Image (tube, rainbow, N blue to C red):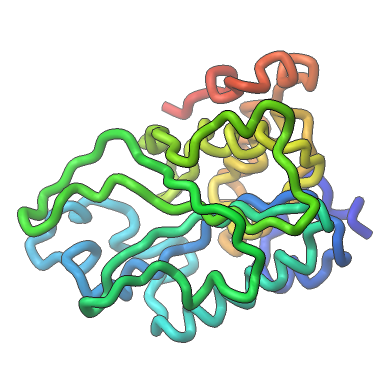
Length: 261
């Protein structure tokens, strides 16, 4: 039953966890999968002079995932994940799927090999504030892409449609996870919907759960790394907010939540 999973982060493979959930039981999916960055042929993760990634945690991959799959297998896996998310969301549900475009072997990867046969409604650009670029061959990368995949009856919360489709939000630079969601980004997404049950199948450090709980919504998370599950649960305990306070601060929850030092 769905109640057995509410407000929990399940340590396990995302597909295994999602397959245990009933059809049309989720209002909203908010997630960002690993980007397969170590499979890059550019000068990012494999930059020979150290450069941008010399001291970054992602140079080693994630805790239990090396982030280096053949692209066809990676795309097939991610598409399978998206189809499972589609099964889970209600007829008025939506998926906010955060990913990254890149050039690979001289060809543009806009993730069309992943995001297809699903009702893509809109593309949102997350413009990351700041950053440092040590590579003289490239302009500083400053954006990621959020695919809004929505079933036909999905609508935004009242007044949320005044927001534009380019969101300038600072990265989270004080998080043990190598690629964390910023609290402000997830606050904007969830606060822009009336969703009551929110799923993140790649929960990572728990930002989706922290924000959902703070807004008085239910969450379900899947995360294969025990280390990240422990980190997420610790953040949930640190950031417990009474529902009345959360509702009062619904548009600026990130100002209320504890900023990790």
